[in-house]
Image 1 (cartoon, helix red, strand yellow):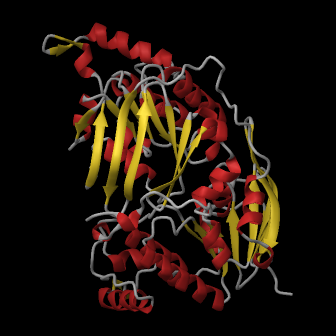
Image 2 (cartoon, helix red, strand yellow):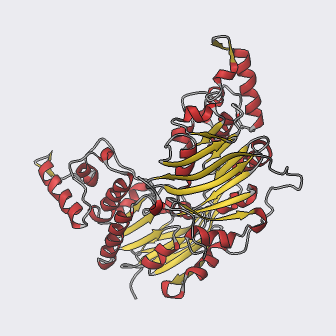
Image 3 (cartoon, one colour):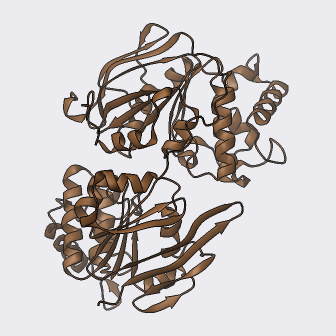
Amino acid sequence: MKTPALTLNGISKIYPGTVALDRVSFEVYPGEVHGLIGKNGAGKSTLVGILAGLIEPTEGTISLGGRSFRTLSRVRAKREGVAIVPQEPELILDLSVAENLFLGELPSRKGLLDRKTMRTLAEEVLSAYGTGINAGLLAGDLSLSERQLLLILKSCVVEDAPIVVLDESSAPLSGRDALILRKIVEDLRSRGKAIVYISHHIDELLEICDRMTVLRDGKAVAVRERASLDHASLSELIIGEESSLTGGRSEDTPTPGEEILRVEGLSRWGAFGDISFSLRRGEILGLAGLRGSGRTELLKALAGIDPADEGEIFLRGNSVRFRSPAEALAEGIAYLPEEREKEGLLRSFSIRDNLLLNSFGNVCGGRFISWEKSEERALAVFREVRVKAFSIHQGVDELSGGNRQKVVIGRIMANSPEIYLLDEPTRGVDIGAKKAILSIVSERIRNGAGVIITSPGLDDLIEVCDRILVLSKGGIFREYERKDFSEHRLFLDMQGFGQQERRGGRECQAV
């Protein structure tokens, strides 16, 4: 028997009020591709953080090449040969492709950077896998897919680590670059590297992995050989028992009113195609789909951020075409971005000023902002979204992640829009903040407005939605009314395993 390259033995991580990991154990051998899969919130990210040396486990041990550790630091993890390729490319965009590839291990000659050798080595790596990337380009000039591929090459090939963790690394890749990743993985397997492959795509795992560990609610519920699994059995292990379909919905939830938004044949090249649906006042419409299904891109098209190439949008019965977010906001459409830290907040501003960013026009007295009106409006929204802070003048940067998200939600609520586009409003927040945010959506935001919401998991959508549209490969795969919600069926449809042909998709888009 080979000695495992990586062994996790009874790893637990307990936060106040939350068990993120509960005695998780599995092994990864040299030359093995070990899949790790589970729903959002199952504990995958926490496990990656522990292996990267970013999170200290509450209990358990980590064995690397036969040496055991109770915890790892970032330096120790790297020294022991653990390379992590994250979901998002982490590159220095102002440096060249070659410099990014060899950053930390720059070739030198007589104490000086040997640029010629570095360029030659970079070109060898890039051409060996047929990337077509120019080593002299700035990383900032690459596409998102090329940046991710560059990071994969750096960790897997240049650093030559014995243990590689691919944390949903294929998600940003184009079809061509995804094939290059497969080639890299096969090369690593043949050279005896141990690979932990994390993905939400069942097809991908069944094609690539030798064994798989399934996480559910922080526990490793199964470790299986690839040969013993198929789509149905793996899906059943991931989902477990059906979650409650009643969620936070009460019997007196009002019936949705008149149609306020209709979309017909909306398409944007490379993102989504032939999308058609309607939204009624007082309705919460969920968009379910894996990363890359077109959820965020569709919301950005509706918000005027990245307008569609074809199709029509009807607002209150009138055809509209937004060329900017300001135009959409003026017509009552507000967008809550997926990346709140980058797109949703001004971190140097106070809570008050962030809350009023979308609605300064409503608190003016003549040509100037009325201090009294702005204080009154900000305080009302502050209380409505229940931000936990000393006052509205506290810096937003001092808040927890959940409370910062409440500020972003309050910012768009302050302008009283008719349509809310909420892109993963509960992403990255704790359980308490998640419940509070869903309560705001269900009990406050939907009143007099229509809501379109995406989520990193199905639980949130099942909790609050009246209808759910499942997106797969840029098209609508299926539509569910609330009475028909089934976590198993929704999950399978998101993977594209359902029997019904999807409506639209990337291949039917126009340039």
